[in-house]
Image: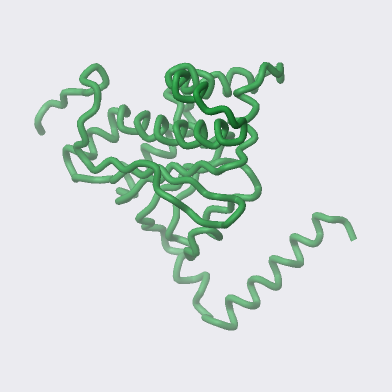
Length: 212
């Protein structure tokens, strides 16, 4: 049997299991979605968003990319966030990084990997901003883990700088922005940062909106 066929068989077993527990498991979601959460996570296969948070289908709107980045020129990510904030009106946006992140580790090196260099450049910028702290950490693994945390915090700030997030704060007093870390060694999540609606940011990134 080809390895991909195992996935199809697993799907059949999963459907049967869900239907045995609740016959309307799938039909109850077929009419639409109204999740409370947007999850921006890493593409790493060891960090399945729904699995680690224990949520059901329909509860979590998900976007994943290498190293859970919020980059202002990434129209894929921007489209997901705008849809989640303006149409779905999610209450919470979670940026979740993880220890052992290959993207963060590679960003600390001088490896040349072609196109991905352009993506990881944004993590190098985070390193440069916090170089004094990071270069004061002698242990390499601890330095990488700290950069993982700082990168998550930076991406949360990047979310707060988006005009449509600020507009949602003004109009709806949501979403709350969260920065979390997933520990691949323990399976536990921990909070790095949190920004409530209206949290002050650097004025250069703030927008003035005309009253309706």
